[in-house]
Image (tube, rainbow, N blue to C red):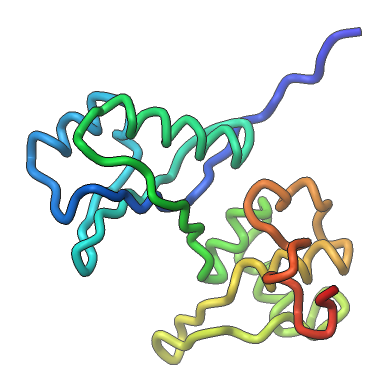
Length: 169
């Protein structure tokens, strides 16, 4: 029996580095040469962040390969922690689940689906809203809008901190 080919997709996450409070041009070049060309480096309040959009067969593979690439760069830093990009726009939700923004808008407004879509966490402007991805992904899987495996590598919807208060163990 032939193994089913794994599909690659894009995963968004940030790695926060320890050991540095700034990045030199040489360090950025070393990161890119080591395989981090899909990362945007930044320094926020004295912490070095690498924001990745990495193509891989799973979230785990994306993160582990990024960590290996950071270590391979040998810039005097290591990965302190992983930070998932948790706030998402309507368009990002659509991209993550492979649907159109119009479809997601219909879920948000209750035209499609069972209603009670999670409320936005933040209103950047009157027309730009941000949702917590863990709340959205939990709602999508609980209401059979997407299969759990579609979001399982992108979030921890089934872990305690992502469950709505009434669903916590």
